[in-house]
Image (tube, rainbow, N blue to C red):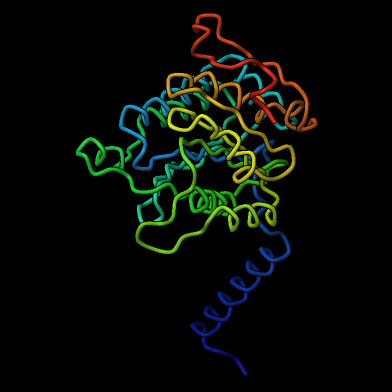
Length: 278
């Protein structure tokens, strides 16, 4: 029996379609290999003023301009780091993430630094109008960052959520949320390390809370900044430890030498080398 030409064409298309599907199943698209997947999760809750938020953003962008940080980014086996940022606050408020950026050259690092400086954060704009950003849902912010890592299309030898904030976790204001115990268990299950940067402006012992309640995973540690003015130096030193394959893969305990900015007053660095890290 001879089939009509139109039927043969349709049948041929089905053959090609199933052949493509079979090829995709046999050769699945592989995620891009990087040395590190990292989310910078910054506090945008009601306790953070607009100026304090900007100090976090500007300080992080400045850290990416530091020559030692750039060298750390490009010094791994692949010379590539996948990075994104997210602003979190109360669970009832939206999160504000950036896109994922692949850092593999000075130009790509500059582009991400500029993305931070241009961060379109409606929550920050509302603070200028006196509306605030709600409570401090740290766990919910971490879980959001974990979801970002899980769906980013990269495969990293290491995975990190870098949390910065100025307060302890508060009860959700308007809706149920993931809490820190939930987030830490999820991070452990997914093999993600959670590190902390505690800003001590309103709570001089916040770094102790971060060590006990926030951080988790292999080599997890806390850095402290005495205030928001000290944030830029603290985030630079924190990123150096997270980005360097030699330092990050080393033991969690023991002293770590801070890279100090010779142009930064001593009161801005705010702390000696060894007590800052654990």
